[in-house]
Length: 110
Image (tube, rainbow, N blue to C red; front, side):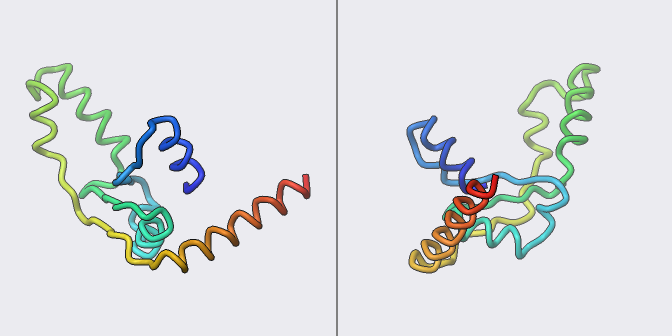
C-alpha cells in the first residue's frame, strides 16, 4: 500500500492526506491503525465496509429514481472511524527501511 500511495502522490504532484478504506480487511482496527502509522495519513473507514455492493445498489437506485442525485446518496454515507497516524518518524523510517530491504531481497530471488 505504501508504494502505491507514493506512486499516486507522484502522479498527482501532491501529498495524499486521507486514505478511504473498505472491504473485509478494513474491519481490523490493528491493521487500519498500522496503515495510518506507516503511511502517515488519516485512514477513514465507512459505516458500511462492503461498499462495492453498496455502490451497485446506489447506482441501481439512481437509475430507477429512488435517489434524485449523488447528493442524496452522500447523505447516506457515514464514517464509522478515523485512524490518525501516531507512530513517530524514526520508527516509521526503520520499518519502511526493513520493508524496502525485503523487497530488494525478493527481487534478487526471482
